[in-house]
Image (cartoon, rainbow, N blue to C red; front, side, top):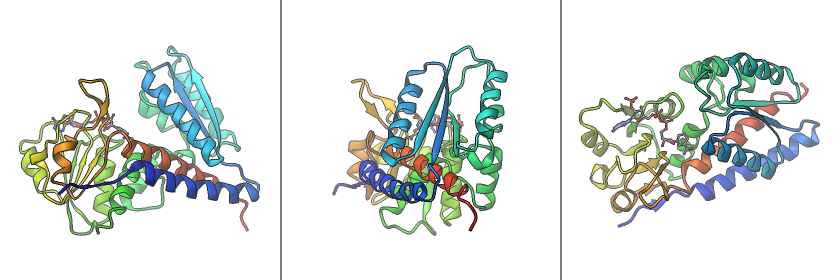
Length: 285
Ligand code: NDP
């Protein structure tokens, strides 16, 4: 039996359509949601991501501003621009595209973003709020992962969830969101000894490593929900995930493809967060 495909294309289109509807209502109330994206240098992947964000904004009726700075920008110069956009009342969401050049301390810049404009959900304040379960912006990729799991109709509570990867932007927050919904969560990383065995115990398996084929078909429990966050290039130059898709989809109950999976949901969730940021600015009744 082959797994059902969790389509990022279909889900993201639904999420963006709802966001666009909300933007219409906001505009009618005098608020035009606006997302500012700062990009430093010319990393080709970042250029593609920033273009994608501007396109999504356009589709949803959100105003987008892209501030493109040269590779040699200093931390001080970048902080000045963040500060300017932080004070600009017309800008609701503000993010700095990562990675930043080596001369800049990523976290120092992220923490200069006011938490109420931090639509990536990366500031220490937002992360802290997420940990203690307070209202916050959820980081876009883990939020997309959860939406994809929910779309299968399974109940997360009581399930064994295994997250492979422990980065601050994907693995750790994905594990926290699963925990928040009462899964029993195991986090694996490069020092994990019995990765295959742990993965095989997972009702919900989230792969966020960045290595093609790190999850093989025999590491997937029959019927599991498999969410592949990884973005890699195959030997043929084509995009692929961390999971051996052909082998895993013969075993899993549901699986996300790459491309056409989590990446599209990540982008859609940024639109949701930008709308949320704009809602905060509605005049109080
Ligand atoms: P990082 O490189 O920051 O983290 C990778 C994690 O994988 C680390 O925790 C590392 O462990 C772990 N790891 C590395 N090798 C192994 C291994 N052999 N076995 C088990 N764990 C291992 O990456 P990110 O979290 O930023 O991204 C992960 C992937 O997701 C990348 O391919 C990235 O491009 C993609 N991505 C996709 C997004 C999307 O929207 N689809 C958004 C963001 C990222 P350790 O901590 O011990 O080093």
